[in-house]
Image 1: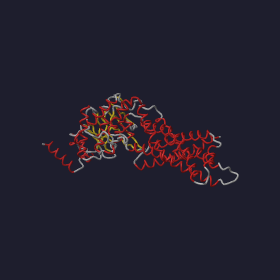
Image 2: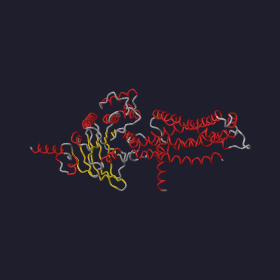
Image 3: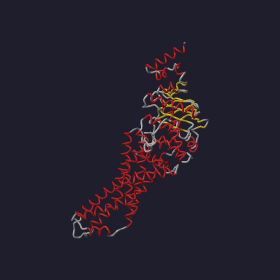
Image 4: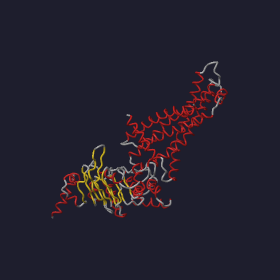
Length: 256
Length: 248
């Protein structure tokens, strides 16, 4: 479990995060949602330690990130997998090379065992016959899968995903969502997903926090979100005609 | 302006403290090192050869045309060509050209890695990204640049020989006698020492600009230009200092 206590972050005198408190539970897909520019990515980068918050603490299963020394941070980072918005695959490495990379750097396994592990991860994300292709030779959806395979190659306890569905078609987005949900449950990871894809919110949102102008405005799950009376949240989640219709349908069903 | 320069220099020094750390995995480091020697060093050979041969030829022609005096011995063309190549061209001028090729290559490569979050991905994995990316480039380039310098000296002298061989401006015997006369071995070492320092400047300055890029493709281009401009100025400054220290 990851716990965030009173996180605040400023950039050039502008406060981007205001006193955020949240809990991200183990074995669940935890979603951070909010409009573009609301501070979701900043919060995610604070969580993984890429940005240092000015105030507040972050706890990884009781271990405080703020007070960790370099060695402890390095140990923690080996338990972290991250999927970036643009996949962040290494251009000069093949698909197999990308997935092998963390194993080569940190795994005590032999080369043969590393290859087996890499192939297992590639198979797990449903990629076939792409081992020797370079990132520029595969589609955006495939790149995300490779990034997921790389992120899980060291069996991380914590998985962070920054807008995993951005730039993908709806069908591929659903496949990526299902994959993230499946591996979270399978490996009992603490998964934190930063998204504004409402299909993800209503599909895999086992725990959701809503960030609005740097404040944590609401928390719940994909069931309670239909009953929320938070206007900003409703404006974001049920913005389209289709989702408004879905909300009305859910409310009617709940009243019956 | 002064405050900004001091801040940038401070950041550069902090960056170097990250670069000069023990690599996480030596095996991976040596593999990277060979790749960088190939990309930054071996791939620069054609450029060095082409430029050196032509400049060597041009220097020989210029010397022949301009040193027309019964008081100047006929072997002066070869001697002057050799001194120019050894003292300045094959070290300073060649490194200024390499600052354009290698410096922009390093800055744009690392800058692109930064804006596409590849560096963040390494940091998340617990890898010292500055050390992992920059150290092999720096060591690879510094190790290989003396080879380029000596190659440039030889090929430049050969360019001058071609002028003697294929034109009637000067004789081959005079040219060869000139390049062998009054040879001071220290000038070769002086050129090599300078190129090592210049290679260090090119690799670290270009990496620094690339590593701290913020934004997108436009900023990567700007960083690449800044890297070339800054390293060129620093090379010229270092040239003055090294010449004073090594030749006086």
